[in-house]
Length: 92
Image (cartoon, rainbow, N blue to C red; front, side, top):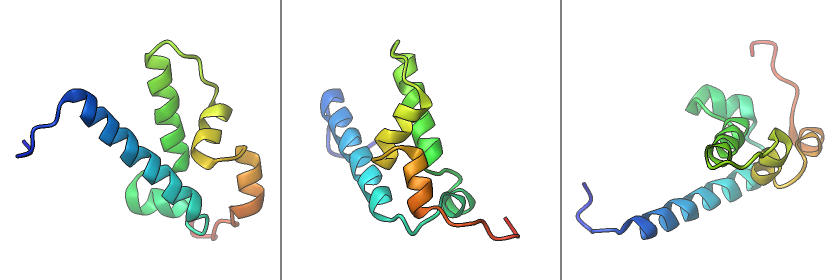
């Protein structure tokens, strides 16, 4: 338990700020491929967008995958793939 008491609303705000910073960081680091994230961290941008969609659905909001991915990638997924995704190495 943290030593600093944090009320639930503030905790949610802090978590949301950390999430936004993570998304911004991933948008800036287009050199880091999803396969590398998955291999090293066990999740990638697509996982993050799926978690976002699932959170929306748990609150009764229908959010298509394409819209959830746009939130994470900052552009349509197909555009991101065309601009930044590299061919996978034969070992992947």
